[in-house]
Image (cartoon, rainbow, N blue to C red; front, side):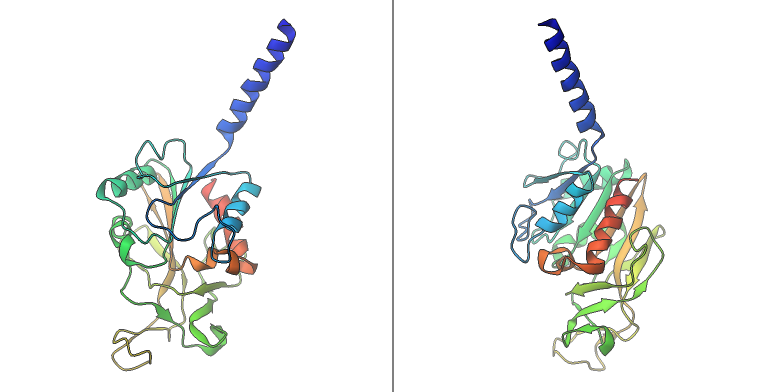
Length: 251
């Protein structure tokens, strides 16, 4: 009997050690997200989450406020497709999480709700989506959907030939320690006058699509598009990107 109890105790001990050594990624779903890790539809994030599980991560989600307690024992936080802004206290909690060594990934569906968080990170966006003018990069004749081959050397872009995006918001670093690692062609444009055509009043330039930076002991990345991680588009180089992300987050 004592032998059986001893074996059970050892089994529980090793189980606890195993759980403690498993990195945990937390998906924020408390800000009116329409696309979640639990659902399997074409616009959902279940394949993205499965990729992390297959790479040895514990995958969890939360629909509550982000606090220092919520982020305890979390190695990586993903905020994808938020339709509702974070409260000031949540932004402070996320900031503290990164400064203390946490990893943060932000993916934009619409930019406006996340502008206060982006500003805290040292990133700016704009009130308009990017359209690609280079025809060879446009996907299915839709300028809002395009590939970028302008990738800067970074652990997130390692070994990638391109990324495919499906509705992106321009990103701009605002401070040292934040850099653009993926961008459009120099002829991409934002429709500032909202007439759905390229005109003299529109912004034409190279726009940032992925930015990465550090804050304190931690690191973060902001993606101009969340659709690139949805089940319908989770293939090819976009899927390889998440392999890189998993390794980058677990450094």
